[in-house]
Image (cartoon, rainbow, N blue to C red):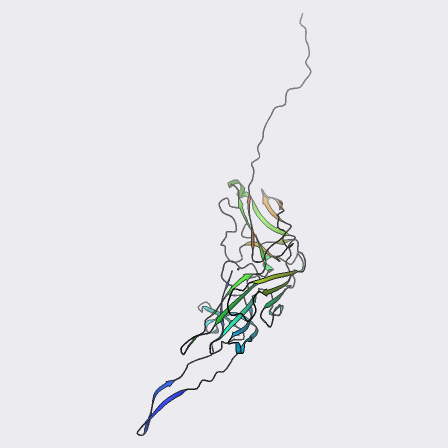
Length: 354
């Protein structure tokens, strides 16, 4: 939203003979400043976001509400897609990206003002699937990615890490100087994460190779409602967001990304805690009471033969933004033989020698 502000310029002019001399001039050099974001996640890669760095390929849907000055309080701009913007508008190896800005640029007021922001982000979730209420108090996400309705098409690599954030920021005023800070947004995860790490229990167990880990009985798609606990007009204080999911159904055999496991190591768990982006062996599921997993199956090979092991965890309920990590140690047990000898059998023959 672009707004034009006109400022009066006061000049003091003194006449001296036939010339005019400008002694002083008050010319505020205010220019429209684009609203930008500095997002951090607390966690468009189509996998779980790792660490605290917001992926540069992610976009976010943002809506803003003006709280101050109260005379102009109300919606400041409608839902807008913000994406990573590159310096000079170019994307190349030598041009460092700089900030998240609106695909339709949004600008700060040229004066003292405070804005509330609410944002939702999710790779693979289109902008039309995200609605943010006019009052900015809530948001809804329809998480029904095309093709993710059957076990044969849904996998960890097609999942979307849906995140949300609330933030406040103000135009700074000091004398005739205005400052326009970036809006810090701490994103939180709306899904629950089931994570696996596997290790060999001894050197001999390094002969085991994991071929897949399959999560059964979890819910993966549905509709999400996000509701903030503070009125949209609030100008300070913490804001918590209630996460409420309505699941669509159940997909019983989602295979996690197990390429980072493979042959086991008896020293370290695989994948490591801080691996490369997308290297986790994990599955994001719809959280809630009664929304957990029924079991997971570890498929592996040993001595050229395929085997599987089913584990039944007590995980009926899950919480949004929580990671449930299963650190699995697989130990081969040596085959030991305890030999005994069968007694000789037979019928004795009595022989009498005269």
